[in-house]
Image (cartoon, one colour):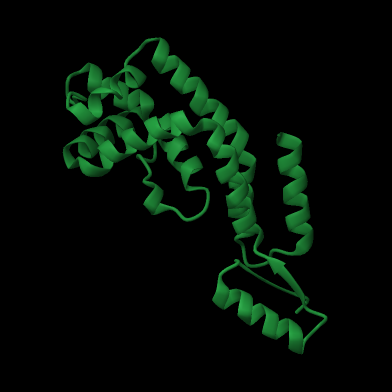
Amino acid sequence: YSAIAGDGGSNVRSAKIKINAEFPWILNIYDPCHNLNLFLKDLGKLFKDTLIIVSGIANYFGKSNYGTFHLDVQRKMEGVREGIKSTAETRFSSSYLQVVSVHDCMSPIKKCVASGTLKFDTKATKKLLPYIKEGTQHWKFMAEMSGFIQLLSSGANTILTLEGQNTNCADVFYAWVCIAYHL
């Protein structure tokens, strides 16, 4: 082997130091997926308000079996393959995947609300309605989600690629070059 990679946790860091002490030719590198995830988190801070709304919509469907059922029916009729993702369902780039899911499900959500099947009428959900119904806030929200997706897509897709078993240092370098190009 030529390198050992892992996150910065104390148990992993200690093992990497011991391996490197016994085999000094083995490179001790930080896990690129963890680095990329931290990078994506930092970029996500630019979209704090958007992520709060996305999280609110995702939480609504995460807690409502009724809402999830009707969203599933409507999205299948519209050909939307996946439902709303919870940040707990994913490991790396969870905010990115959640925003993509809300963005992709927005048309079925709007139709469910317009038909009266779903109501955002509680104190906690009322504030989400302007971002779902047609109007200035809705289109601004959709544009912000699109910007978030475009900005983070190269990094999130890179994480999926680098999690493969046959990844090498050249792949990591190429991934960072691709991300820099897209930014």
